[in-house]
Image (cartoon, rainbow, N blue to C red; front, side):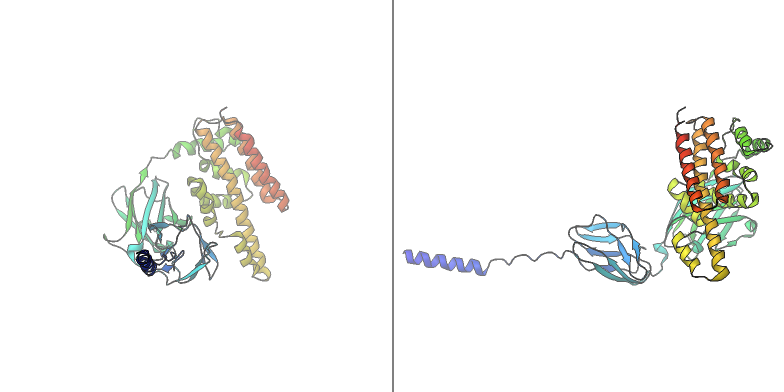
Length: 397
């Protein structure tokens, strides 16, 4: 009997071994990356990335913090129109090893385009429009705007309808997808419509926005400024400006300051006209806007391009780049001056502190352009920072 029981136990044990489940295969930790013709990528990875970068091999450009969604637990799909150029890319992964992939390039389609208008301000002097676009470039943007009288005007790749052909329209690319349009001395605009030049029609993507109109106080400001311009020195001019009850902005007095405080007033005013719209942007966008207006891409890269030239062309290139960099630095001073005036207008600080800061800063600007060497300019930049810190001590007083 015992023998039979033992045989049965051995039999069932052998069956359980034969039919035992095979161990589960380990999940593939980082699957193949697929790049689509809409400029997006998809892949599986366990564990999921919190964030990751992609490098384009041809020029070593880094795409940081790739936006997208984990559509399944471990399946990632990126946003579209990220990898628009055909070629080889790589995700550098310290945990599982680098994962390379090839993109076919984006096949254009109107449905891939997206527009978003952030703001539109219009008066008798200028209109400023801030907007974002994905899937298009500056030369593909079509702008339509309806004036107060209901008539329609069009601007497209430097083409202007007849009624605005003498109007100055500036299109600035502040960041990758951020744009600013400035229409100077044009009509007051009621509504704007932004679309792609090849995607016209009601079924294609566009953005429509109503402009905010405020009747300007320019007449009052100009009359008051003219009175102060009768003063002999810039110190007296600044004291005059801040002795009135009018709330000025920096842009209201910047041209007058040029006449007092510049060797070349016309050149100074010309630079002001290029840069003053940048002062209306958020802090993080001001410098990008100024770089675009001054045609500064990357100072190191721009310098290397100058270095490739020879003889007089090389000298002229570096001289021109140096001037534009100086203008960018002086624009940073202007940002601080503008901020100080805004604080005064909000009753956060007394006019004595602001007057002193602006006078010192304007004197520094003049000295900065005539500085003999790099060290002198560095010292002047430090002095502006110190003056700014000292001015802030007056907050609440």
